[in-house]
Image (tube, one colour):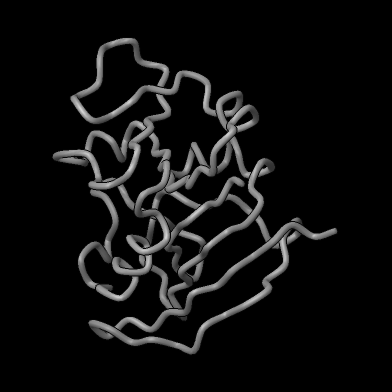
Amino acid sequence: MIRFIAVIDSKQGLADDNGIPWQGLLPTDIAFFRSKSIHGNLMMGYGWYVEQKKPLPERKNLVATTKTEPLRPGFEAVHDARAYLQNAKEDIWVGGGALLFASTLDLANVLYITQLKDQDWHCTKFFPPYKDKFQMVSESEPITESGITYTFQVWKPKK
């Protein structure tokens, strides 16, 4: 099973050139991400890898990259993310960034979207269009933290 997990603003923004604008402001979302991906296989793009000081604990940290230099200990390079996901025997969580999401969206079995409500964070990196190919199957009650209101949504491919 290929599961995507992302936080997006009202314009499907994921991040700007300095990173994730709401980083550290949504503790319930951080706990949600951890609870979903713990003890699993997590694929991240190279940009996210660079931002990480160390591997996320209790997960296999896969890095989608075309670079050939060795990664830091605890990270495993994946040089063809599409092929890896297509041939995966185990469940994989895909956590972004934008290029990884865009290049593999058609392989997703489910999307876990944390939707920031009514806020444009002026992002420069975006989650790919998905609403034409996926349908929302559940949405949590709104949660407000640090003045930010959001919901947890689950989307599955349309039949």
